[in-house]
Image (cartoon, rainbow, N blue to C red; front, side, top):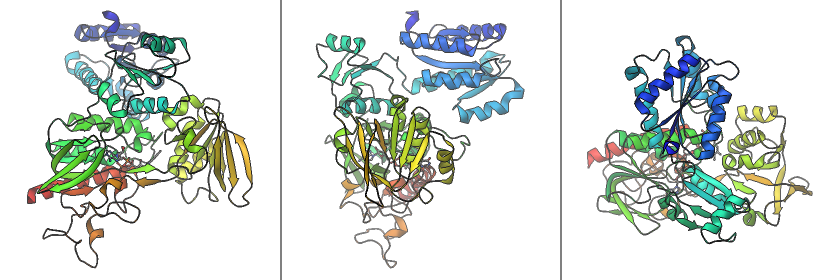
Length: 554
Ligand SMILES: Cc1cc2nc3c(=O)[nH]c(=O)nc-3n(C[C@H](O)[C@H](O)[C@H](O)COP(=O)(O)OP(=O)(O)OC[C@H]3O[C@@H](n4cnc5c(N)ncnc54)[C@H](O)[C@@H]3O)c2cc1C
């Protein structure tokens, strides 16, 4: 029994303090949690490795800030790799609070606690309660809960892992050609041809499941709880999450519908450095995970693996249709569907996608790139960030750019980081002409865009970031879109001062409103929007103000 309790781990180099924290924690949390105590960072990391091996979940880490050898910050940073879902708090003396505040950004610290923490009822327990609440809300499961058996170079195995990771579902990855993976396949009466195999926490075996089935079986909500809402938000990137936080916090009945994983493009960003309030940058996954928790906490319903395929007006209701035929109605709709990556149209690439060729998935695949030669295609910020991130593990990263350089397409701070990273090379005037390999990517054909000369290079990984198109095809004929498919809103709908054809109201469309009243667009999917996290969040929040104005006038 004891072994399966989630863990609260505390580390402090002063044995007296360490014992006292553990004692106070045990007093309140002992019945439900296993309290683990360590007296140094390395000792605590070792304990975490053992706990992980046993498959026990780790809920909270409490680390002393000043410890010889490895500071509390260093420990928490390294612990993040081992137990990324555990909530983190630092124990500090009053004099160290500045450092602790900085750490909130550097290691995404949840809290800092001042020593002494007496009386614990006032100073320690409320904080630990909140940390446990956050951990529970994120739906952490024991790491052994979901198991995925597959091949490293199987595109479907990759898609399943990427889906679980992006939805913050813990899973164990078991290669099908290793003993543990083989055993699991045998136990399910299957062989290596039946991959990916997903074994759910309830023991169900799913062979190559589709996303809806997978989502439902690992506990993600996929269908709405009711059939009418104040607002339906389509898309769970920064714009949709921003809208959901503001809608739910202001008491609107809100459902957010996301077809893959909340976070959108931002969730795939290795490090966002220009978002307000994070001077040391923040990983997109952390930022958007916080936003998702925040929206849920305010009461927004979040559906995952639910793709919206239609929108229509039925009287004053706005009805949204799902790919599975279901529908949901609301007073208002916020379109926050963002953009999807453009694919590289050269021979060999389609067949090798997910088997060495990846779109926007640098963070999921980075560990596999250790000591490999990696290619990144693209000249904008997404490509730059991926290159910097991958360079930490890869032997060499080559950034392929069609134009003369990066100055016109990439932020200055990133160009500088590329220049300052020894194992990154930027190759201007170069494009990918072809990709080849049997099981997985092995070679790339590169073409000089000026001379046309071609060369073949060995390559195991290619990450593609070559622009994107709006996810709005399903809105054809429903709302006005521009020639590239972005949703036209507000003043842009007025031509020569005239309201759009068929506009039924005696007022102009609001700033983010489409030509169907009560339907708003926010973020990258909107025509003329600034393609940035901050502006997407801002537009999401602003759309909600306009939703209120619309509802008041009804
Ligand atoms: C790798 C990378 C790094 C970046 N780095 C930065 C950075 O450092 N700083 C910065 O400011 N910006 C950065 N950006 C840009 C930034 O991420 C985007 O501007 C921002 O995410 C746009 O937010 P959004 O919510 O409008 O759209 P998206 O983030 O595109 O989210 C849209 C969501 O809608 C979902 N969706 C689409 N269609 C449907 C449908 N029919 N039904 C249900 N759901 C649907 C999608 O699955 C997606 O999750 C980066 C982008 C990338 C790709």
